[in-house]
Amino acid sequence: MALVVLVAGCAQPVNRAAKPEPPKPKPLDTRPAGEPAAKPADKATAEPKPAAKPKPAAKPAPKPKMQVKEAWDFAKLAEGEWEWRFPGGGQVKTAAGAIYSTTRSRPGPTFRGADIDAAGITHVEVEMSITRSDGRDSRREVAFEKLVFYFARATDARPEGGRPFDNKRSAVLKPVKGRPDVYRAMLAGHRDWNGTMEGFFVSVLVPELAQAEIAKGVTYMVRTASITFLK
Image (cartoon, rainbow, N blue to C red):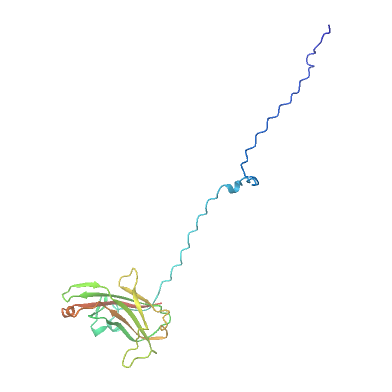
């Protein structure tokens, strides 16, 4: 009987290769036939960038302030320095300006023989107010129907025996926002506002009074504080 001798330490280890893991199943492709596969999203563009904040709108440049070219302050000037005349010659100088009374619409402050160059003058501004008086020391402020500024050049033709003013050489005076009793008209750009001006007047239109009211002493007191040419 043969003996099999096993020598300790001489046995060779058996090399058993690890079994490979079975492949993972591919995800099910549900695309229609012929449709290309979608590209993977680019990380740089996958997340939307925050919208840029809009830049604040540039503030408009402030309009240059108009400057006084020539002015008449009837509260400060002596009556002999007014140069402007008022209806009826019955004007009264007060701390608030020149005041005259009237019961109807008519030309108000008037300046003749002015000899003023229109060049550089862009606007005319007047400060005026009107009060209704019932003849018994009862007065209340009312509104003008309209104020219109008329002008005439030294070269404008004069109707025989009349004044050189005409409706085509006029501008409506409009209220200035935020400045009570102040009215302004633009003269720059008017086709006849050029050359040397000979005269001006403000047409003052007032609410019509009935004859019965006039008979009871109702009248209007028109106050003119100042007249200013602006540039």
